[in-house]
Amino acid sequence: MVIAQRFAVNPRFDPSETSWLPFPFWLTGSVMALLGREPWVARAVAVASGVVAVLLCFLAARRLGASPRAALLGCLVASAFPYSAWLGVATVPELLTAALIVFAAACASDAPSGRGRLLGALALMAASLSRYEAWPVAGVYAILCLADAREAPRAGLAAVIAVAGPLAWMVHGVLHHDSALFFVKRVADYQRAIGASPESWALAALHKPLAYFRTEPELTGSVVLLGAYCRRHGVRIFRRTRRTWWCLGALLAFLVAADVRGASATHHAERVLLAPWLMSALALGTMALALGAPSRSGRTRLPTVALVGLLLVASAWLRPWFARRDGFIDRSVHLALGHAARLAAPGQRVVVDTPDFAFYAILAGHTDPRLALPLDDMDPRHAREEDAFQSCEALSRTMHARGATLLVTTGASHRKLARGCYEEVLRAGELSLLRSGSGARAPAPPP
Image (tube, rainbow, N blue to C red):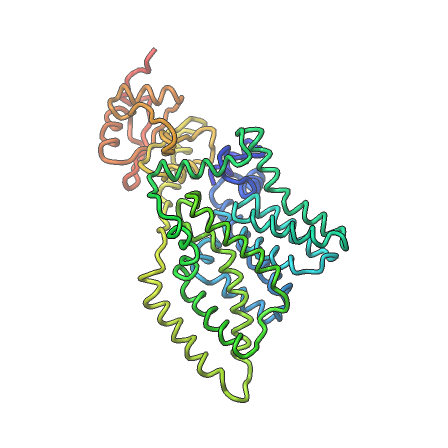
């Protein structure tokens, strides 16, 4: 959200100037430039993106040959399993990106002369500028299109569009970071800096395959059970999926390779599996309808009972014990305090001191990235500066160097020293907003 606010103020190709891909910030930042930089704008974009993601899943299922009822049922499952529901309204690009990947993978099975190949390529260009796990899908998609280019020139154009995003980002890396693969090194450096313990390649290679089953046990268990039933009784799930599975297989291979290299996601690591989960949900919709179809032998009774039993066991036992994930933290107090800091001193700079990445929520609540900045960005790769809370003089030097008149701080020791230097304007939980100036006891800034 903060990076999108920066883009709204100062549009640029690389809004974050880090390894984060730019499309999500282009999207949210552009809307913020029109409607304002308040957090509700980012939330509205997130909800709208979630709706678009579900629509893309419906279109993907239809392209794969599912009936309208099966596609609708699959979309209901795709929007309801926990990780999809959590990320579908969060201000992150994961669900929309995963849906774009699934839609493009479905388009890979379209006739090469149709417009579906171009639509899939456009979806992959947006997805590959949002999340790196879309890159192997774009590569496989381009290879498939090139294989068809002789008989359908439009497929050749689709191949170029599909890889345009990764190529553009790598060119940007060469021009601005001296390496086309600068993002790989940055992620690996961060993993080492935070002390992520190295594992054997065999254990690392099992992380994502196990997480696929462990993190969403109800969904994946149902897919395995109904898949076995459909295979045994000759029920065809989709008409054409070979190329679709090639695309998703490339994604899974990429995720395993990233784990082995120590360059995987550093938090909520399972979120990169959203595309396989979405495809599983779409397949589940078709299989569930096949299971419920009338049968002269009544053979659906046993799988139905088994499915209900599986869902009960997965929900009551597997999910509490094995479906572990990082927690989502409520930052509403931080957002409110950021808003209060902006109202307390319009047009004046505020420095934010927190012991973790909570400062981003305060910056987002303030809405102006030109005036709100962290005391410490918490990046373990950066050298630490002087401790500003050694004394009032040290704190004054830090505030003066940043041209700030407001301070947000937390923690008993920091708040105690800050209240001895500045005037406390507002307290919210463990957070304090302080201001220098009239009535404050801050020493004069050094010459």
